[in-house]
Amino acid sequence: MEESKLLYKGKAKKLFKTNDLKTLRVEYLDQATALNGIRKDTVIGKSILNNQITALVFEQLKLKGIHNHFIRLISKHEQLVEEVEIIPLEVVVRNVSAGSFAKRLAIPEGQELEFPILEFYYKDDSLDDPIINGDHIKILKIATEEEMTTIKNEAHKINQLLIELFEKINIRLIDFKIEFGRREDGTILLADEITPDTCRLWDKKTNDHLDKDVYRRNIGDIVPVYQEVLHRLEQTFN
Ligand code: C5P
Image (cartoon, rainbow, N blue to C red; front, side):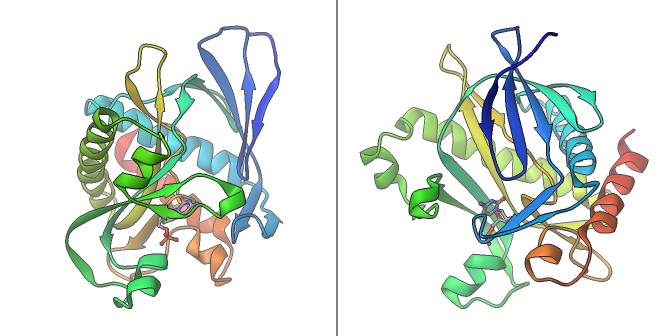
């Protein structure tokens, strides 16, 4: 696999074109950000952890029938993925009140929700990723109604599978964010990443945060926390 043109540099990873038109090389970065990039720190070791965590989770989801972009690990901090056109939508699934939801609606953090709820945020840094609804998605032509039906169904399925997966390693899945892409043939595929950067994960016994809130709230070092998540996943799924 010869290389490679930088296609995109995000807050936690870089995407490179490969010689194969249908694949991209993803390089995870030793970087943590909060407040949409306003706060930024180097965190040595984070890239390796997130690369491996998302690989393992995407492999487990694939085994359960969730089509996704992950192909294989290339190195400790790089992976090969299928190239898709990313739909500019952050799909957030919530099982328990936390974060912006708890704040916006004054529902105490930690309160179990009666049913999993979906939220959509428009991926646009210049607008600060605003929350939007189905009508906004239609007006902005972000996705078709048929695509949104698929995305909603997949998001609920993924939530159920992730609840079960994390339950096996004594972690409560509070909420998470996923992204989807379009293949050239129009099919919808789970893309991006599923890591402690993009999920809220609470230890079942202690309620300790095993996710990026440790960084966002300045309550400790995320490396040992992410290591703990990877360690538990590897012990159960490798
Ligand atoms: O901050 P908020 O409560 O809206 O986040 C909901 C979930 O989405 C959290 O798990 C958070 O980690 C994730 N998220 C993300 N990327 C963003 C915003 C939220 O991964 N840009």
